[in-house]
Image (cartoon, rainbow, N blue to C red; front, side, top):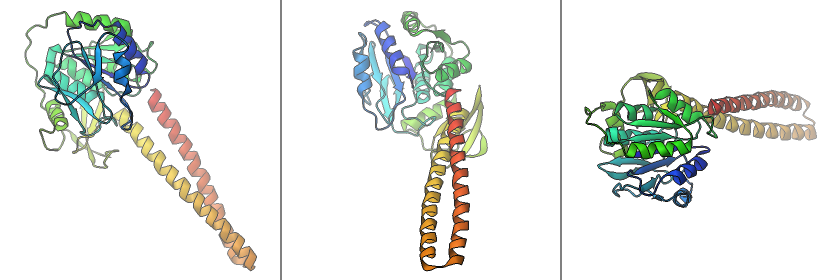
Length: 328
């Protein structure tokens, strides 16, 4: 089983990977690309035309077959269970659905040492924890060379998380996949991680939401505002709410920045409306000869104008913080 994750800049990398893989590949490929919930399903057709492997949108319950590429559809997590494809509208992971980590975790539990994880171009760090789990279950990890990646956030995060990732250009990753698929896996002691298996069960709806592992962090979930529990996981903490939304520190900070920016835009809109109302009240007081009211409304308008400028300055700074997070 080969599980592949990509985000910004990932389509070209995926096309290059598909072009370099043979049609008789002795492996199944499951693929996640970060796309909006309203996005179309054109990716499967693009990849199907890019190389000899048959690519199609994944269908819940279909069996895994060698030489096939299963593409996560919009607004569905792609997972694997009992050698079949599973689709889920489970909680967003790192702010995404589909996301890389749920796929990688389910593949690690399902395939153990028969699992290969590949991370291509993208921002932030979705997939980094999944890579570490794939290795812990006996699988192997390859990462697109950050120098070649259009966006190197996801590749670098995977490199920091995995113990022994292969850092390669896309064409070399294809050769690595072929080589690994032709190499028998030895008998290894079965790995079991209750926390990982609990997470997978949440996505597969075989378990009810429970209190996550770790300690209460004092933070709230950017998705549902529920309390977040913090678990120390290399290389950075992980946060999860009872519903199952899960975040790395980096993705949570990015999502918080977006929430703050939205709130600031609402505040800016309300302040602008208040300023326009006060300006009308000033004009009305002037027509009526109400000098005292005109002066009082003018003072209020001046205060609102100063607050408006402050909010605009804060909004521009919050946007800069988010840009820094996305580029880190």
